[in-house]
Length: 380
Ligand SMILES: *Cc1c(COP(=O)(O)O)cnc(C)c1O
Image 1 (cartoon, rainbow, N blue to C red):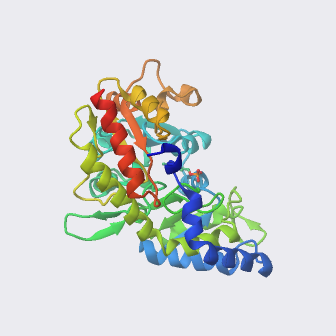
Image 2 (image 1 turned 90 degrees about the vertical axis):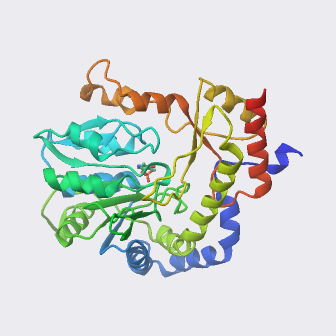
Image 3 (image 1 turned 120 degrees about the vertical axis):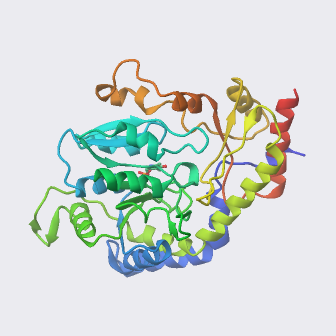
């Protein structure tokens, strides 16, 4: 087997585009010739379709996932120094916007099996200054939202879900009802960055809520703080989803379940081939959430993670470390963190995680080759 000819990538945007090229090209050209570049019918259509898909009352499209988080926090009317609980093992954006707005990020540990924060971890971090929690559904699996909402309601806290990596995942409550992630907390945020499970061809994001008052506030903040044109009630931002991106997303939303299904099949293949290798741990599946595998992330034990990554690279197999540095060790958060602050599970994860190629276009030949190489490494 010629490894180069397999051309294995972390994500395969080109392969995915080629399958829907005709539809996408038509839609993009339609926007261009319509000249409705800002808001307009494509944005409205995508917004309505995403509301239906997620089962939420309001979707407010915006410019990117980081803006979604920022606008969501701005809409809550918090004051300087208010505390917002956030996992220390996530993409920087989740905590960055908290610091940006003059709020205090309170970083908490995550569960080592699910990579997500839990209700009990959150509860230990609550103080009289705590105002909000931002759970992240990391790598495509929901945090335990029922328990988190219970704690939040008990302490009167807002919950903003960072759903950038889990769009399409279903969370099941104890009574059997199911909800899509992003539609469970007071506000949900997502990103349409190209490599996300639902990605556009540039930047994009959305905010969702079932609360009419919050929706009005979010819309206002995202639109220069105006509720009526040229009447500005609060300091806001300009954050819009581009009409061309909305047209692309409206096409791709129809295929989201198919894409997530392909990811789940790839993950199942990895599972069967890698589960009995001593020295690695395959991703844990929660009983109350589906997993849409934004990433397929292994734990590599005994300090072998970097050697495995180097070995795979020699075989032209890419892999990524999401995330190598705990957020509390990032210089940007220095003023918010005490010297020597460490969280044990975050430390373990930053040392052991390795994400294998994961996207909707992986074929069995590629998966077989990747698994063979991982197996070969551990037999060395
Ligand atoms: C991608 C991502 C974001 C930010 O989205 P952008 O669209 O890149 O701004 C936020 N949080 C998480 C967990 C993400 O994965």
